[in-house]
Structure formats: C-alpha cells, structure tokens
Image (cartoon, rainbow, N blue to C red; front, side, top):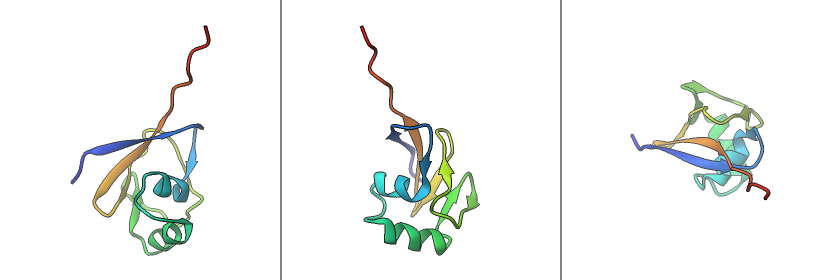
Length: 79
C-alpha cells in the first residue's frame, strides 16, 4: 500500500469525481464515473457509487492501490 498523499483543494469539500481528476488517477470525468460505478473507489473503507459525493479533508480515498486525502490549501496571510 502506498503512503497517503495529500491533494490540495481550495474549498472545504470537493466532489469525488473532481478529486480523482485532481489527484491525476483518472484522465477525465467519464473515467471517474466508470471507476466509481464499477466499485473500484472507496472512501473511508466504504464503496461509494456517486461521483458527486462530497469529500472533506481527512477522509481517505483509495483507488488502484493509491491512497489520498484532500487537504485544504492555506490562504496567504494578508499583511
């Protein structure tokens, strides 16, 4: 099993299909839909069947032997 990789996101949540694309584990939304519908993706150990499922930082997503979690990007401080 690979180490858990943090995938930076801007908002507080991200849709599962978007996260798969952002993590570069699928090439496009059609591929994301296919692997999700084929029960190849888990979130916190549970199969998820909707690519629109909202994923939050700290949730563990696994696909094709890779594990990753969204990580909120820090806003630059205003001075």
